Image (cartoon, rainbow over all chains, first blue to last red; front, side, top):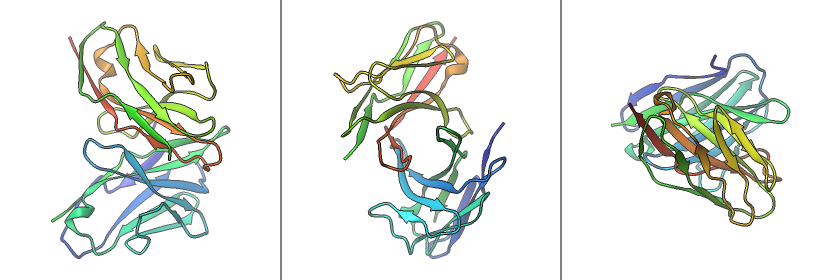
Length: 115
Length: 113
């Protein structure tokens, strides 16, 4: 069964508003989660590494003030897209790092459409 | 920087046909290589992996061999089934990157009866 869930699976919001996406580790306490963004017919691009209890580490070119990441517990990380614009429309995917050796387990993704 | 290139899709095959999805990579050092599969409505799942040159990863009838001399990790299956219809992603994880993955663009496979 699924070990990582995302909510919502699909969200439509108006330009200028903010939207929060949740990523939950269902059966594992994860200290590290990742957030990816995927454009149509393109690869997954890593946005940031979410670390429980500390600030997220953002990849080069990702605006940390626009994409707020909070990893407040070992089972939940949230991504908030602030002041969303149509160019933020994309598929956002999270993953959980677990196991030995480490392996990433992916959520089903959230499709964001900004109108 | 690191990069992964995989063949564009969609790939359409009849059931029981032979499958090859090409994947080549560019990376410094000695990366680990992965194939992930994404079925409709689900998250990416690890299909197979190889951690060093000449290693062969295999799972569910799929195989891929880590070829350092050609920087390739092509995915193969001898006889595909309709249930194999999905999007396949090639990826690499380089040493010292804290488990970060670099993905290819994905290849959609459609298997018909």
